[in-house]
Length: 117
Ligand code: SF4
Image (cartoon, rainbow, N blue to C red; front, side, top):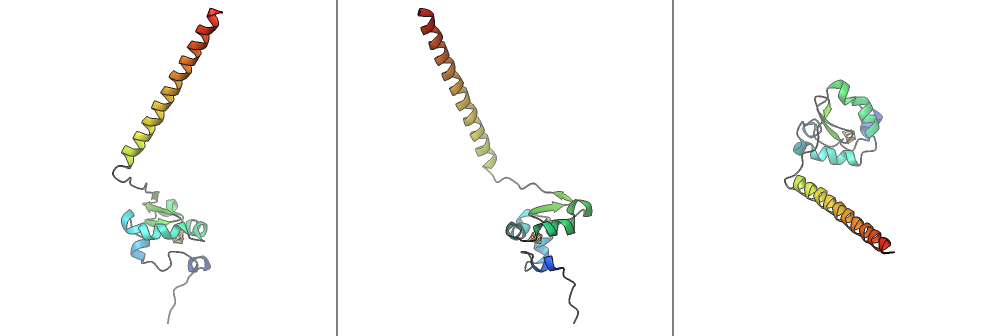
């Protein structure tokens, strides 16, 4: 019986037991199990070196990323994440403005107190 050639690093791949349709999926939802495997994979570097996703125009999961036509696919934000991020940035900006105003008030008070002299 013919056994496919397997490099030593491939035998240690965390995704070894997953279906090729998962590992070579172009879609994030379907590729999620492979991406989770990458997070604990001991041969991630070997995988990326062997696959060379950018040069090979790879489609699928390699070294913790989903690739499409050799380009890493950005994870899609869930609904509400963008709004939460914006709210956080606005809160930080408002806090900075409040601190600036407080510092100005303190400086003004110090100047006023100093001018009474
Ligand atoms: S890095 Fe990810 S895709 Fe590559 S062998 Fe490991 S688990 Fe599989």
